[in-house]
Every structure is written in C-alpha cells, then in structure tokens.
Figure 1 (cartoon, rainbow, N blue to C red):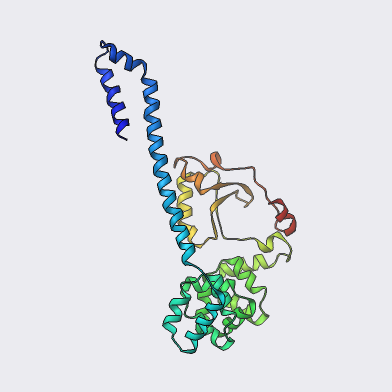
Figure 2 (figure 1 turned 180 degrees about the vertical axis):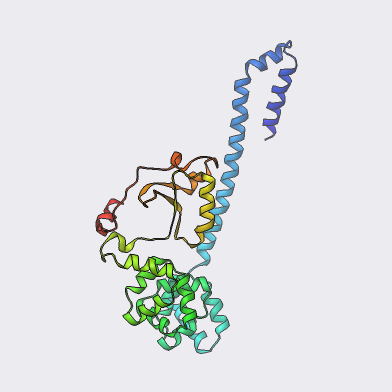
Amino acid sequence: MGCCRKVVETLSDGQQDMSNPRHNLTQLHRPVMLKLVWLTIWRELFLSLQVCLRGFFKRRCKMLEIYDFDFEQAVEEVSKLLDNKEYHKLKAYLNDLNPADIASLLAEIPEEKLPVVFRLLGKDLASETFVEMDPDGQETLIKSFSDKELKEIIDNLFVDDTVDIIEEMPANVVRRILANTNPQTRKEINEILKYPEDSAGAIMTTEYIWLRKDSTVQEAFQSIRKFAVDKETIYTCYVIDRERHLEGVVSVKELLLSDYSTHIADIMETNVISFGTLDDQELVAQAF
C-alpha cells in the first residue's frame, strides 16, 4: 500500500503548481496513475483474500481429519462405557459425534438401555438425533418419555419432521404426540397430513419466511429477526399476496445488498417454478 500513497502524493503535488512542466506531465498522465492506484489496491485485496481462504481451507481440512468415525470401534466404546456405568464419559463421547452417527449407534443398543443413553444428549443434539433414528427406536423412546420430555423433543422439531415421525407411528403414539404439541403446531401437522401421500403437499414445509411486495427491506429484516428462530427456511423469503398466492422470491443476500428504503417488489425474482399442493411428487422432483 506504500506505492499507493506515493502515487496519491504525486497527484496532490501536481495540483499545486501547474506552471511546472513536470507537474503538467503528471497532470496528463493522471488517468494512468489512477489506474495504477486501483490496480495496487485490488492486488492487495486479492492477496488478503488468498490468505483468508488458505486459512479457512486449512482449518476445514483439520476438522475433517479430527472427525474420523469408526462405527465398529464406536459401538465397542459405547458398550464398554454403558456396561461400566461411566455415564459422564459416555455423555462427553456422544456429544462430540454428529446426529446421524449417534442414531446409528443407538440402533445397536439394547432396547431397555436406549432411554438412558438418549437422555445423556444435549437438548438440541437430542432432537436432531431423534429425527435420524429408525421408527422402532423412536417409538421405544416416545413410550419411555414423560409428557414433559416428549413436549421438549417435539417443540424442537420442524413440523415436516414431526409429520414424518407421525406417519410411521401407531395410532396410540400419534395421539400422545398430538396431545403434547401446541395448537398452532397441531394445526400445521393436520394441514400436511390431509394431503395424499404422493403429493407435493405431503412433503412441503410450512415453516418459512414470507413477505409482502409493498414492504421495504428494513421491514423485511424486522420480520426475519422476529420469526426466523422458528423457521426451517430463512435464506430464501417468499413474497405472497393477501390470499397467500406466491408472487416471487427474494434471497437474504439480495436484501443485504439493497438499501433499507427499497421495496421488495423492486428486487424480488418473479420468474419462479411453482406447483400446487396436490401435484405429484415425481413431477415436482423432475422440475428441479
């Protein structure tokens, strides 16, 4: 950046005394010098970006190296800790794994010990793991849960995940799940369940951010901050009319790059692919 400063100083000197031929020459070559300034600045930014990306990928590779999951070894370790009742160590071990791997391990644990092991998981990790488990394991846990425990799990799930679980459960378990959901969630579950199994509506999510096209970017961000915590999809916002018909979409990136006073109608994408809730799932999949 030192050469940038020198060029700028030279330009400044050239404005002070136009009678000097050397300064006149500087004045004539000002466009060239300005290009040099910008080229130098961009070069510095590019080099800085290279350093940042190199550091990011090094850290990423290091993370991948650290997480080396050996299923057979993990089953042996969990069984040993469980048999020795070393629950503190087992909790630390499990909470370092990802939900899919934990679900695979839980499938190997005797049914009578499954609730004990599951209760060692942190709240969020427990919900994420529960979704990954097979229906038999989920049913075993639901039967062992108190109403409070069941409500905590269900409250932490997205509605479409809850629907997937309900569809695999016997009627008595379904009634208990629905009894421990809040009225709004129960309404959304019933809304999805009424669609035919092979329809687009059966696999849709009702948890998304919606906006009005006459809203401003500032109002959009206020809405996102207020409702995003409970939504499954926040990176793409859906623009709907008063009758809840889709009019377009806008990404969070587009919102970030726009002025607060800009209206959503001016930046939303209206050329979108859409389907009805009763359309066949295969037809929908082919379109994407």
